Image (cartoon, rainbow over all chains, first blue to last red; front, side, top):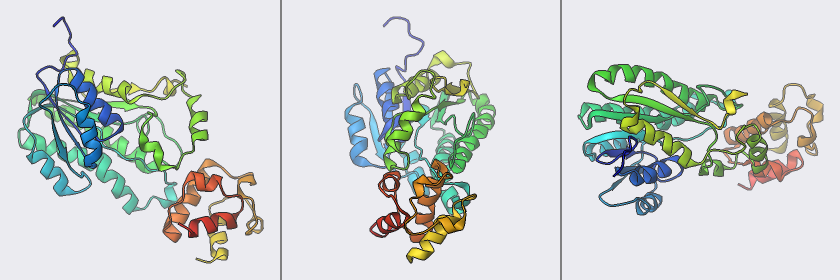
Amino acid sequence: MSYNPFTLEGKTILVTGASSGIGRATAIECSKMGARVIITGRNEERLEETYRNLQKADHKFIVSDLGEENGIQNLVSQLPAIDGVVHCAGITSNLPFQFATREKFDSIMDVNFYAPVEISRLSIKAKKLNKNSSIVFISSISGVFISSVASSIYCASKGALNGLIKGLALDLASKGIRVNSVNPGIVETNLFDAGLITKEQLAVEMNNYPLKRYGKPEDIAHAAIYLLSTASSWVTGANLLIDGGYTLK
Amino acid sequence: MELNDFIQKFAEQFEETAIELFTAETEFKNLPEWSSLTALSIIAMVDEEMEKRITGADIRNSSTIEDLFKLALSK
């Protein structure tokens, strides 16, 4: 094929949270760029749907609940050697701070922070990450660049990831492993289906985006592809802001 | 939970509005202090106090405090 520094040909990529939203789009787009993709998620039916949409063959799916410690160990034990991971699994929280109990914090931190931490740590310990591999965290603009009401738990989980990325990037540099994040603004995913935010509120909020639309899951997938590919060989410890211009104002 | 307790917990989510303004018939979305943050506080209060999950749509579909109380009870 012609010159393409963004290709993922010959690379095996793990994508978490692949049963929906950004994770699903990332898995599909990575397969289109030539990667062999290992997908994981909680919902077997929806994970199979993602699997059916992957291009070419020889992909693999592993059903796992990252909210449980055994789920993570089970996932890592089934992994082949990989060249990259995109941590997409995440949940949101809309609790005013006075209701943000330790229990509520733990339930969000377990999925948004500790799960990607443990997947990364156990994969490295088991030497499943090849030299020159790339770890990508799907973070957020929230907790790193901005905040919004009733999102203290969510912001804390993403802010914690931001610190982790810097520490990890330095620790793993000697192994040639790069660590970066993608920080999206609002992306159209089914996280909205929880019903806490109304459609009217979403329509008003869209006007705060200079590019006048919310992100598509593919917008974020393409950023992850860049960070997984050799095009970003000299990029580590970075936060790639993808927000339709939201934080400019 | 009784309606009167619910009204009291409802009122606790507000900072400025006088307590006497909260009754079963209060059309809460017309209160000047009503905002998206108070809406989220009400949703969280119902979860914490009643162990019921209400949504933004439930708030939209309720007019008075009693409407919302009945809707929460029906969950």
